[in-house]
Length: 86
Image (cartoon, rainbow, N blue to C red; front, side, top):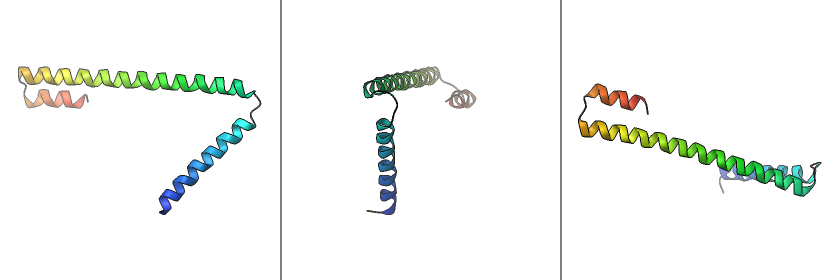
């Protein structure tokens, strides 16, 4: 096992130990903590999904614009304008 792998394993072990201690020493009941964590993870997942959908829509828009430009024919300046917005 090389040094980078050992460092990465140490970091993950530290994160896991910290999370476990944080949950064990938390002032709230475990069920409340799990509910809060579940809600936070659901919100994070929804935000990631919304962000990904927005990026996909943006890329689809760029693809459509470039496709239209290619089908209509365009000069180099028009191509540069489309590429700059990517």
